[in-house]
Image (cartoon, rainbow, N blue to C red; front, side, top):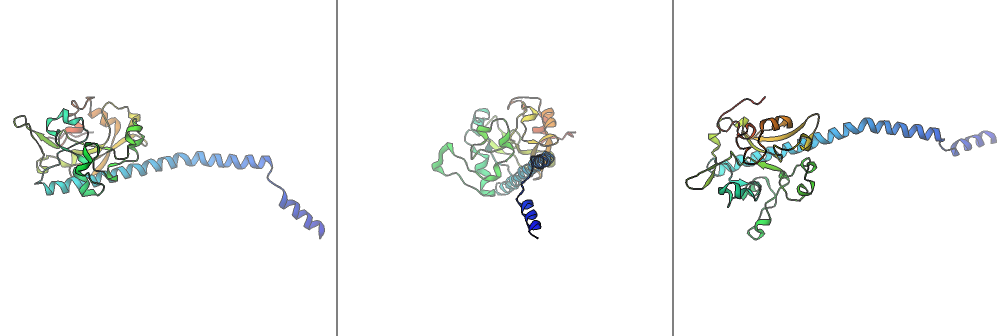
Length: 247
């Protein structure tokens, strides 16, 4: 009886051998190598869905704004420097200032001055901060989306005034880009915010739906590489006055 008890005690006190530890570590490493790509892909998909949801909310806000302002889209700028590109935007508010009342968030007060804009989490995409200018995009209240100022507004060369375009004048709302994730035509594909099976970006359309577009298609539709030359590119112009199927 004493020998059995001693044998059991010895068995309980014995630790793992080096071989057993190496086997366990190898199994864990193998599991991690199998699961990591799936977890990374799931994270990317979650970020894409979040950004797409943000765009739907923004498009809802644009629609509500138009209801309140005689069917006209907002007259708003994306960046301070746009006031030098389009004279009509010199006195315009930022697009966040105009949409925040409809989506909730911190509104800008008169005392804030030009260094502050209204802000909501709806304007922040978790995937965009991974694009090339991390230091800039990580500014807490930076807008990660662009408003199609080229087509959403009408500029008068006679009066030098600008007004929001009437939504009823948009020829094909389902094809007309209104809001889209922050990208530029001269970006490399690897810099786009969503890197799933194929790099892509999310877009909000004039009929209030949101969907994604392959990054390579965006680049193909935007042969121009500056803000001024992108205005008539199919991605920017399509659907507003005419419609060309984008394949």
